[in-house]
Image (cartoon, rainbow, N blue to C red; front, side, top):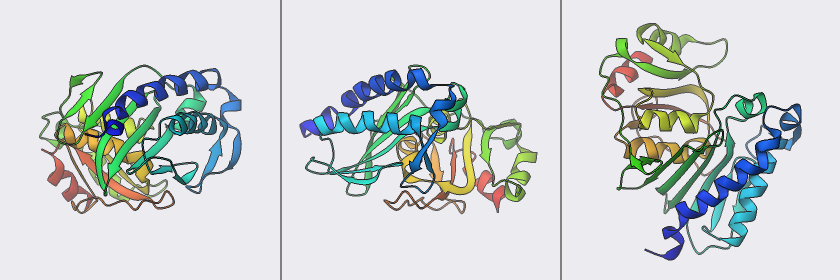
Length: 263
């Protein structure tokens, strides 16, 4: 293994510590939600997003872990590293952070030749850290995690996002499942699926970007979960923050059933 990949998760730890410290004074304040400019993803960059991203960029300048950085706010940035791509969402769940709801995360994924290799998701409102390495399983604070075994939709707790005013597809599924959760940070919801706190995360809005999902997908699948598009086919994201996708992530056992209900 080359040294860069060895210390990826260690560097992520330092980054997360600094980001949490930098944004702490802003949490739950109107200042956090000030629009600074348009982000690369086509949505406004809030003050708190920029503070977090600047913090990460400063770290990566000193530890060039990748050749290319793809971030929600800055877009595609050429870096000093030899190879690899990092997908970054400095704060996934910005609304929660601005509102003071303790569910928002830093999401960092490392890919080589189109394959996700390592993932790091930290709930910045606490200290919970989810990590994964391709082929080596997924972990929460260093302990191995695995998906739930819930097999029946009637018993399931799913996080389901539908387009506003068009609950069509979500409704059929929503009437079948036991508990409907909407937590507001997709990176963490994928991790929660991975560690069995919820049985699945379904996003029908078509706005989920590679930066939101890259790390969470690796964590969820390494924990035994299944992730696909709405038809059950592999989910392919372009390296482009302006393009959104729909996603179905489950514990695997219920995957076909969920897909059938969404048809």
